[in-house]
Image (cartoon, rainbow, N blue to C red):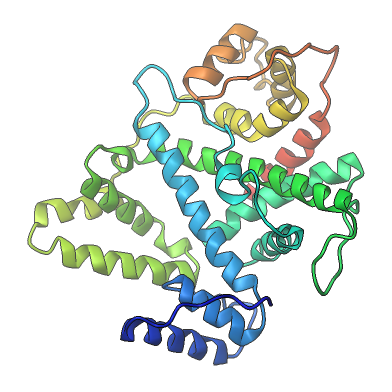
Length: 354
């Protein structure tokens, strides 16, 4: 690992942080062990101790995903009642792989490999990355580009400039799929837990603690411990204000969800949008793919809103899902390019939920 320029410890807290990271590194490694770092210093010290930059990269990755979630949350929270703000506009690209980054091409390879490794960790962000990586792999299998980027297995240096560009292309595409999944999570949360989108920051924070507590039994051990730390700090802060603190229990037991009229359609539209953008599907193209993925119920011959017409679908995409096509496309006869990826991706999603 390249040696980093490190500043002198300024206080005891910094020295303690490094010491804690070293102790973490002494723990026996196991498939279930994925440490939580309180600071970048801890992540760097741990990576140095075990000789693996993966943990430092993951620290940045999780931090960037938190920033992406906050940005998408704010877009929903600040939207007008009649129209959603524009979504899936490259937010994740801007945080994870911005223009001009990195200085060294090997960082692209190391970051993409870290994503591929991180997808198997037992933590909430890893589940999102796993869904996005699954979509990217299906897409690359369909395109025949699974092995179009060579690099040195020791230094991570791409073999040629073309290989570096292919790695960057894949990392950017992975960002698109991550953004689609984060968008869906935000969209679903807006319906399921309205208090998480209030203009009162304290209430909003406590509502998020409450909705997490509602699903705590499903959390991994790592995520549960992180939640416990957040819960404890919030309890200390609001111990003199039991009325405000009551938001946690209220949201846990009854989040008072909004009426969500078209969850299945919304899930598909949001999930398919990376394909819409890449292949420049028109709304008629998208409607034909949705018709294939969402067959009519038994004894029914008529489509209902928003799948009853192209215009209905266009309005629904814009006002409910916040999705607007930036470029005008040309409709094709039959199903558009990339529809096989959509079919494989969402048939896998359906099977995993059964």
